[in-house]
Length: 311
Image (cartoon, rainbow, N blue to C red; front, side, top):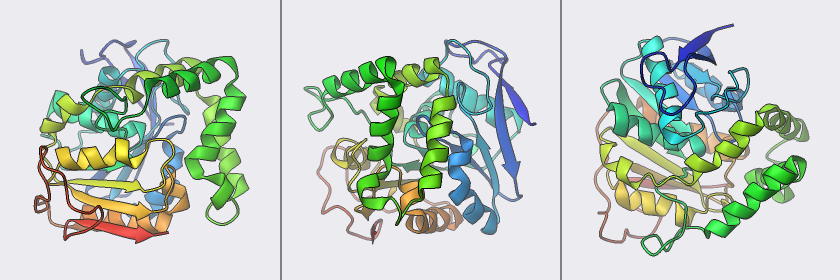
């Protein structure tokens, strides 16, 4: 099986060095690197991989440390080390003109990678259901989520992982609304099995990058970007994440998918894939600015650089 040794180039962040990351590399053409979300693994991109291959891209998906078939080190579950792992993937495969596509927690790696290593190898960046710019509520971030909510979730995770997973997947996919129509029980169980297989250290340690303030990283996003989020997201509410992110990246192409949950890669596959492939195949030029960091944007989902899809 294909593995990449991470952390051997002096960029291991605070984590263990010389760990192995499992990856899958398919197709040819311009490379697209997929960075998965919390408690998932590279196989969670299956529905996007097929669309990207059909569009003529080379698709690389890897398992984050502690997940899937990758190594399970004790340390390194922080934004700096995870970005260093992404750097190891890009350098080991010698990828250039690559598109980085992050989902949820993976969007943090995209932002931290660009601010740490620059965009020399990167052509485009995609932020799907992002945890950016900063999820925690505070005096300078009134739109964020109360830190106590994250602390309660972390306590449940450490005390009763199965109870945590039950709530997590209900909220990830809005199973009360989508099970049997937009997502099958077999797929949910496969994702639960992947979550169960993640190391406890990785599951608990991931709270750190989820609560990381990525606002200082965002000025380094100097490549064309796509921001896409579901309006009904219960895990990273759109008002606490994507709408503030839109103001900080006014040149990005912006899409809201009406009624979509956080796990929209599976529940709203057709809409996500359409916007993703359209963006990746479009000329590599920034979108027309829609807003500034100091001014409020216009109505969400309006205008030539924004879009919406009703689920």
